Image (cartoon, rainbow, N blue to C red; front, side, top):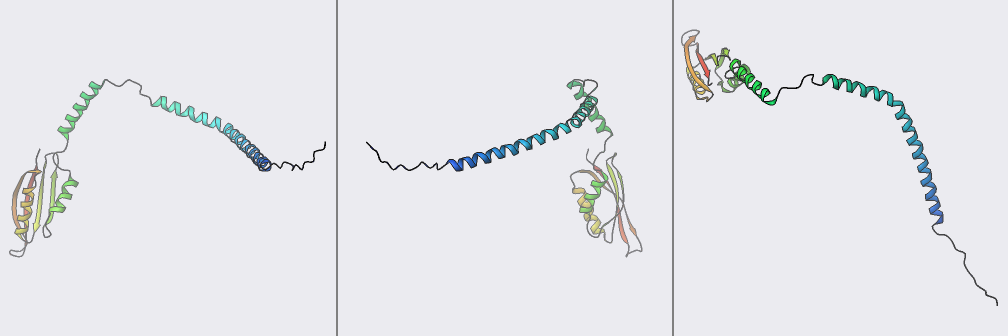
Length: 180
């Protein structure tokens, strides 16, 4: 008996692409291995420098550590209260000079000029000398000072004229005290 068969040879469809993919994978792994080896060698060269730096930082931390233990929290709080009380006694009352000048710059009418300022922050008062061609402008400024809620007292100490009679300027000397 004779069998006559016509069998087609098997052609591997994925064999060639699979072989190419495996070769590319092997090549990329070889490149990755070389790169990691170079990185390891570079880190080995940096290690002594990094260890020296770490030793310096540890020495600095030891030097910066508190030599004595801090007092208990209650003792720190009582000290804080005492310092606050001393600062309050010796501190300024009212505004500082820059704050006062900034406030005056916003409150002075256009035709009123500040001639002098004697500020005593520890006493909580200031002596202003303002000048204007008209007494009405100075009166309006005095009313603005009296309406300010942070002032305890606004007094017109002196009123005078400067220059020739009728053509001169009017000056007000005003004493201001802050609320405590």
